[in-house]
Length: 158
Image 1 (spheres, rainbow, N blue to C red):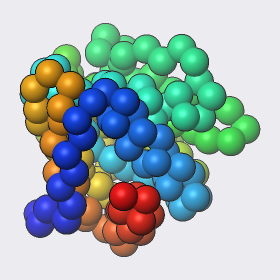
Image 2: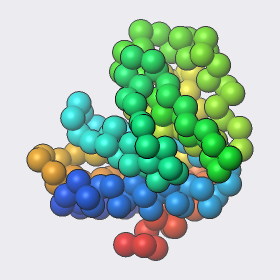
Image 3: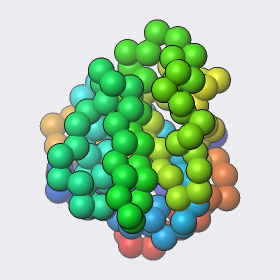
Image 4: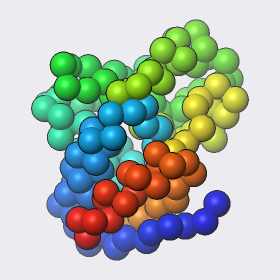
């Protein structure tokens, strides 16, 4: 997996702006999009996901830590935020109907994806987040043509 882009974000505001741009670009694709969010506990995966989701007008964004998935659906978009951290077996995702979340126009944001291997969709893009305090380093890799299109759009704004 080659790293395609490395971004330095110095503040939480920078992270939110990146998430908003990523959301805008994801919507423009009008395809199913799968983004893996990687990083240690507290790295900022949920902050990025929350800002992404809020970009579509969803004010109340809950962490899916205990529910495995929180879905946000309106006339504009269908977003499914997965957190596989507490997953004991990837088969649990089959019970919640994970296959239904990969239709065109659906966006999946998946935290702790490695714990759901075999049940979750392969990623179009991986965003690995590291950092301390408010500063974050994003290492963004693409794995499909959809991921490459998404990255080209995001990169055009930086």
